[in-house]
Amino acid sequence: MTRVLIPLAQGFEELEAVTLIDLLRRAGTEVVTAGLEPGVVQASHGTRLLPDTLLDQVMEDDFDMIVLPGGLPGSTNLDGDPRIHQLLARHHADDRFIAAICAAPKVLANAGLLQGRSVTAYPGAVAIGDYPELDLLTAPVVVDGRIITSRGPGTAMDFALQLIECLEGKDKRDEVETALVREL
Image 1 (cartoon, rainbow, N blue to C red):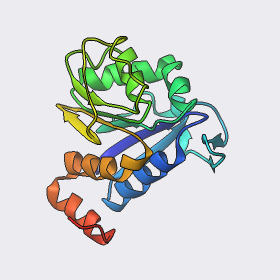
Image 2 (cartoon, rainbow, N blue to C red):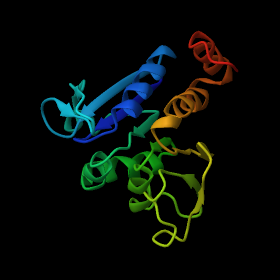
Image 3 (spheres, helix red, strand yellow):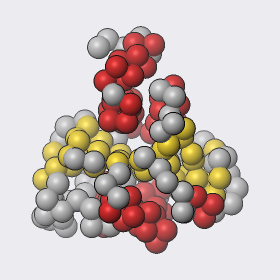
Image 4 (cartoon, rainbow, N blue to C red):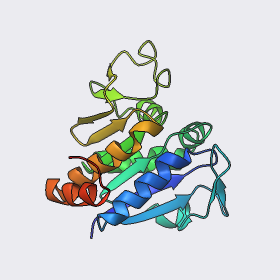
């Protein structure tokens, strides 16, 4: 079974995280949510989620993809945690999928994973002046090799469906999308 890690930091964007968790699980993907610290994690708009586990418990586990939800200060909290950078570097070296939405592509940039890549992010989250080595696009979702980025809360469903396609194939994406009563 395909495994995906979604780290949850205080201040994550709940619409993005919950959409990603829900749609990936609908596709039959094992999604593991991991809190940076023990207990409930409060999202940027007050929603509270209890992660499946602690990040320390899964640091050595293998995942097919790591997905970073955005939100503020959630993305800043992810970026400030050296364990996140360690996981990203290891998964990148192993040529596994890494994905980020909204303000979270900045975490990937600060981890040195976006050099020479095409990406998208929430407007202003990744300033091209700060990262001249990347090609910043305004598309809702951008796939560049094994790096997948998306713009923000409004693109969360499209992002989740693209992740499903990358992990499970177009047929599985279409199956999940059809059941959502979205026009293909």
